[in-house]
Every structure is written in C-alpha cells, then in structure tokens.
Amino acid sequence: MARGSGVGEERTPPRGRMEGARIAPEARRGRGATANPDGRFEATRREGFDDGWPEEVAGARRTDVTPERARHIITRNASPDISFDRSINPYRGCEHGCIYCFARPNHGYVGLSPGLDFETRLFAKPDAAALLERELSAPGYRPRTIALGTATDPYQPIERSHGLTRSVLEVLARFRHPVGIVTKSNLILRDRDLLAAMAAQDLVKVAISVTTLDPDLARRMEPRAPHPRKRLEAIRALSEAGVPVMVLTAPVIPSLNDHEIEAILEAARAAGAREAGYVLLRLPHELDDLVGDWFTEHYPGRKAHVFSLLSGARGGKTYDAAFGTRMIGQGPYADLIRSRFALAKRRLGYSDEPLRQTTALFRRPEAAGDQLALF
Image 1 (cartoon, rainbow, N blue to C red):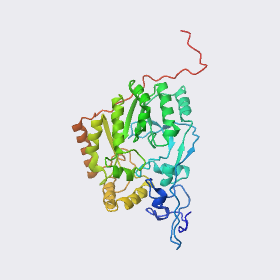
Image 2 (image 1 turned 45 degrees about the horizontal axis):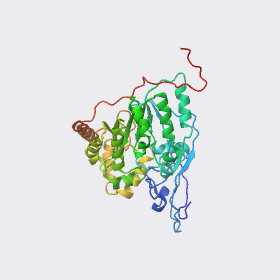
Image 3 (image 1 turned 135 degrees about the vertical axis):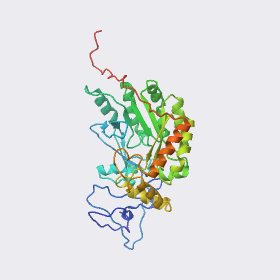
C-alpha cells in the first residue's frame, strides 16, 4: 500500500465514503473508476487518513487476465422485464471501464472491487465454446435465443487476443442456434462473415450501445470503448451486410446525456438501425458511491441535480430493483423520457415490434463416431 494511507478496520462503514479507496489520477490513467472500494462481501473495509508522509503514487495499473474454469457457460434467469431467459458472458469484468456499468458489483463475488479492479483484473473463460457445445448437445436442451454479452462486453479489447466470442459464435452457427448480441465495440465487424450468414437464416440480432455523440463525454465515462463515430460505422456496416441492428441509448443519465436522445436515434437510424431501446441509469449496490465520486471529479456542479432527478424516478431512492420499473423508472422525469423516446422512434420510422430469431432450424450436428442413419 502507498505511504501516506494508514489503514483502519470497521465492520459497517457509512455509505458514500470513498476517501480511503480513491486512486490517484496517475495510477488510473485511461480508466473509468476514480476509486477501488472493497466489495460488499468483504468482512473489513479500508479507511485512509493522513499520517504526515508524502504519498507515493504507483504507476498506472495494467490489465491482468486470469483464466476462469467454469462448469457451465449458459446462465439462466427468470426476470419478467427482460426479453431473454438465458445468456453467455465469455468474460468477467470489462476493460471498457464504463463508470455506469451495472455489472461492476458482480466483481464482489470473486473478492474484488467493483471499482478499478472491475476494469483491470479480468477473467476469461477459455472453455466457453466446449462448454456451450456440451450444453447444446444435451438431450433435454430446448432452444431459445441466447443473449451474448449481457453483463460484460463480448467484444471488449481482450477479445482481440482471446477470441472467445468468435469461438462461441462458431458453435452457435453450427447448431443453427439463435443469438442476440449486445456490444459497444466495432470489433464486432471482425465477425461480419459469421453474422451475415446467421442473419440470412434469421438467427441473429445485434444491439449497439451508443450512449453519447460527444467524444469528450464518451472518453470520460467509457474511456476504453470505441469512439461514438466507430459505433455508428459498425451499425452501418452490419446493416449493409444484412444483419438486423438495434441501437441502445443505455444508460440515459439525467442532466448528462438525456438531451441527446433524439440526436442519437436520428444518427443510428440514418446508419441503418431498425429498432431502438433505452435504460435509465441503474445504481445497484456499490455503483451508487462509485458514480457519485466520478461526478465529484468530472462534473461536480451537476452531481446534486443528477441524483435529485434520478431519485425522483426511483421512488425517492437512487436505485429501485422492482421488476417492471427498474429499467425505465417512474414519475414525471421517467414519463418525460419515455414520451420523448416513443415520439422520436415514431418520427424516425423505427419498428415498434422487436425482430424475433427463429428456433426452427436448431439441430445437433453429428459428432465424430456417431452412427449414420441407414436411410
């Protein structure tokens, strides 16, 4: 630990305390989080204090990737307010570093911080394709669209070297299994060949996240994600290849990017997006304090107003996990966003009905050694 940061321990620290977990700018250059607080499952918490010594700052932290040997690759859910009941995430943690990412608290399950750890200490599942082939081959398996990249981006930078998302898509293509992909990276264009072939069979839909058209804002809140222009180019290239594309304005952040809703939808529609969706900023668990600390550093004058609008849309809290409203909120501000979004979609000619992928083509390829049919 750096000199100048004494350590104390306590069992139940008050919420909102980031001082002991804050990271010096030099040590987090190019990252989204301003702090690295302990996860909520840890028994102790760090508390920094000034001991009179000048602080020594370590160099910028590099990305570390650890293999994760999973027993299963398909995750199931029974949530009534999302459109899929199964998903695959080839990676844990995400190098894009989006400060608002609702998956950050998941790093607590492996004893790591939802802050800087989430974007620098990553896990890759090298057996993802083999596990998927085994699970799809099970006699009792019944196909429904698999969502790829629901927690962390399947096309984050480490995909260039690991190629796990590509290997998962290859398995899905062989089984003729439907898939929906969520990403904010133009790296997806590397797999245009696979996606175009699957799209010709109604097996795939891609959702591209465009949170802002302002490159300065994008660099601050999602520092290692591609430039907004690159995402629009990906929408265009996929659309021209026959791949149906949805644009996601997610998250909508009060008083930060909410004024861009119409402009984002217009730019994405011009690039070929057929569908559009949005999610109001969600702040589960430690994300509340992390985002608050980020605003303190980057937009201190807006912080109080942002959280006031957000709590007004969350029943007086910064986060409400209730099904039906957790994605879009409720109340005057949430109603205004919902109306603006609907009007812009209608004006620009977006589809009201989501494009569904087919399960009718699903098949289990013959494995080596399988007995051939006589006729």
